[in-house]
View 1 (cartoon, rainbow, N blue to C red):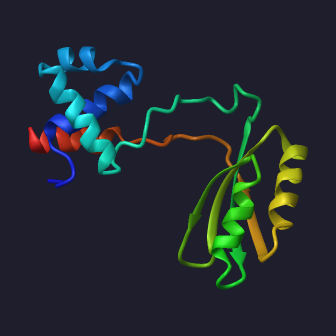
View 2 (view 1 turned 30 degrees about the vertical axis):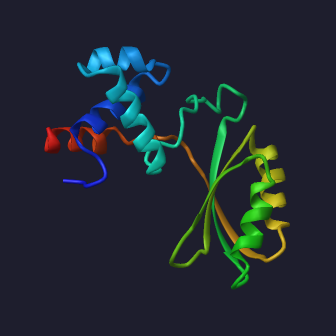
Length: 159
């Protein structure tokens, strides 16, 4: 049983995952607890870094970025901060993860099409201290980013 969340925290986060625009009062009504309890839980989850905010879920393909690609980057040793700073300046770079193994950084990027992806890759390869890249194009996303199974397990285990 995770120490970071209890059943009410998990149920609250599930509720907000399904309905991110739901207000505190309606959340309290649906959970059967006081409004102050929900507000206190949200404040505590935010302070502890579990809840980072309420960004909208955006469909990048509908916005014109129908191509997603992933790249392993090998970089010069000791230059991770400089490389990640430069990568963050490339608008189409959506995520960068420092990794173990063959590559040093794992990058998720989007593009409008193949020609646009080449432009983005050229920008990534042009970053000082990027030594080598290996890029793959995503054909589909059978399992999108998710947290629901973890929250449901916590709600069951704690409740």
